Image (tube, rainbow, N blue to C red):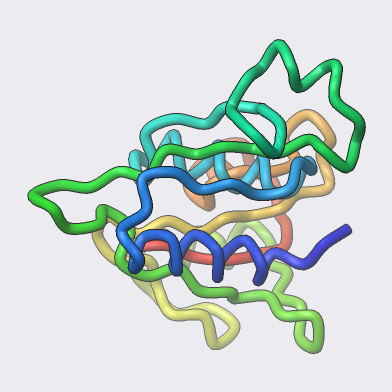
Length: 154
């Protein structure tokens, strides 16, 4: 599985370069993180497609290497909605949190050297539950699912 730092860098660079669309490889990790950003309001649309265009009909016909995820980036008053996206769990130091620690960072307190979430900030959590594999930290807390805190966005 590819590392999430690639997606974090691509999203942040696309916003800084004022691109309208972002194209990333199709895998469950990228789809999960982008769907969380969509639900949080940082991006406006996520579509499956190919290298050439966001065509869902062509997506199923294309080979695995040709499949891509297209995301429309969101701007307000000509300023990007997403200002910063950073990795929390790194390959050299994974950050796993139980429900109590997730409650701490969601309620404004530090846990495991992870700064608390501010207003309008989200954290992406990967859980062991296959039905809810990728969740925002507050959703994981509501469902009482521990997991790896992958990245944060504000």
